[in-house]
Image 1 (cartoon, one colour):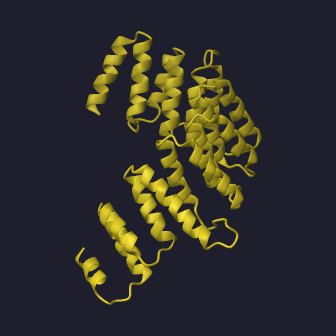
Image 2 (image 1 turned 135 degrees about the vertical axis):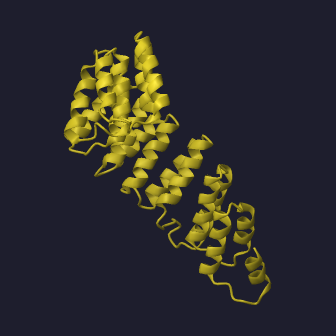
Image 3 (image 1 turned 90 degrees about the vertical axis):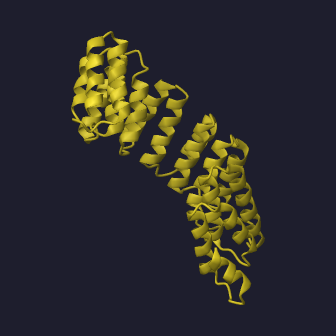
Length: 289
């Protein structure tokens, strides 16, 4: 603060990199108001200046402030842009703003950002595509998610997984399995998050665990069956069908390297199917661990 005050009162020419470092110093220390004061009096700002403030507001859950600052940044950059379309590497800034839109339930502004990204030529950015699919899904707008997904070429694991998670969230479990199979036909690699959503859907199907067993075999083939998200999903899925022995077999495969969700899934499986003694023994294991 003393350095900032000295620079502000002196005739020292303020270089932008130094001002940005001061700005980040304030934000890193949690002095967001001081940072905003410095930001307002900065004679020039670059993308890093705006990005630091936007990220800080989102991190502090001041979502409306982040959105207003992003709009102001757009206006300023568009004023200096001959084509009237803002073009710069914006991926993670847009991710922050879409997070703010989800937290404020601001679907309309998120749609505006989507339209702006299409005009600015970011349609094939897979990172932004997966973020938009997730954004629309979290706000229950599957039509928007479908549009982004269909318009995205060269879809990767993250895009497919976000798409599957949307259908799972909306409890459209048959569609989850359909998309998962289509993902396999496309030859796209699946990760533990993909299987987590798919196993949740399998647990809701009325097929006595048949689909879940097939997915389990797929996880073993790909070597992800011991990943925490997958293991927890498998235990939960088997538990829902009353296949307690299968759930226990999966539960014990990873030794003590299990998270709280996995312990809870196994405990719920015992309780739901009347295995009270096993449930008490498991509780004792939790305390011993």
